[in-house]
Length: 251
Image (tube, rainbow, N blue to C red; front, side, top):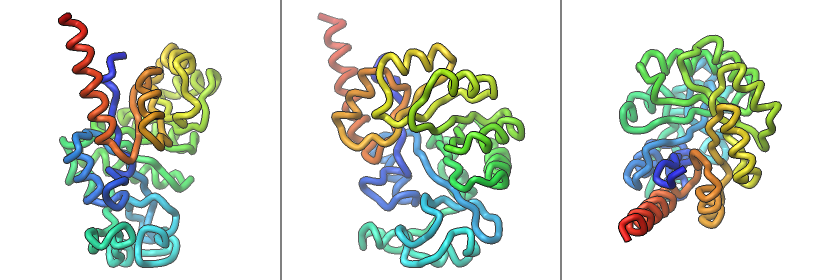
C-alpha cells in the first residue's frame, strides 16, 4: 500500500488539541488536514443520540451523572470545553444529528456505538439515512450483536467491528455478516496479520495509537487507516513519505 492512501482518522476529533467529541475538535481535525473522524454516541434519557465517549458526563463536562439519566436539554446545558482549557469554555455536547448536518460532505465519520442496546443502532441508522450519508459513515462497535443487527436493519450502511486482537475465525464470521472492516488495537497488528485479514476481504484500521513511532510502524506494516489524537502528525508524515517516493522515482 502506498502511504498516501492511509486513512487519517481523527480520534474523537483532533482530541490532542481540542475537547474531544465537540465541534471544536472536529473543526480542528479539518483544519489540520484530516478528512475523517471517529466519534462516540450514547442515548439521552429522552432517546436522543448524543456525541460523548463516557457513559457519564463527569469527566468531560462540569456536570455529573449518567448520560442515559439526563434529557437532551440537561445535557445541552453542560459546558463540555472548560475541562480541557478555558479557551474552549462554552463548547456543548453535540447531537449526532447536528454533527451529520455540520460535516456532511466534509468528514467521513466513524460512529462508535457505546451502549449495548439495539435501539442505539436503529436510531443511528435512521439519522444517517435522513441525512443521505450512508456513503459517508462507517458504524463501529465492540458489541458484535449490535453490528450484526445494524447489517440486517440497514445493509447499505458500512459497518466495522472493533476488536482487541483479530483472528481468522473472527474475520470469516464478520465477512459472512457483511462486515467489511476490522478496527484492531494497533499493537496487535503486524504485516502478516494485516495480510491475512485482507485476504478475508477486510480493511484494517488501527486504534489506540499513542505515539508517532507506533504511527510510523503501522504505516510501514500496511494499515488501511489509523485513528489517533494528533492527525496532523500522520498527515505530515504521509506527505513527507510521498515526496520521498516521488523523488526516488525520478532519479
